[in-house]
Length: 117
Image (cartoon, rainbow, N blue to C red; front, side, top):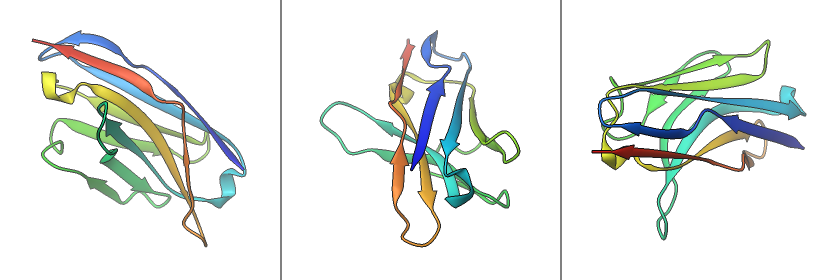
């Protein structure tokens, strides 16, 4: 089992910055990819960014350039630096961990990000 705990959400005005962090515990050696997903009420979670254990990154949509994902394997953490935030970035951000082998995903509890215009 893998447990994920997020921190760093909050409210910010458009143009501002936030940094989200997530710490994994449990069977951390089984984690292949870590990432961040965003969800609005009544919609599916969409991938914001993910990063492999080796540091290869993927960004969803038009977030690349404004968002930067990083990972510290020694500390079992993944972070998302978000800048130039827009109201449409508002949502609940979930930390995700994908396991080797069966590809099972584990999720954090989510952290709210609200960007006001």
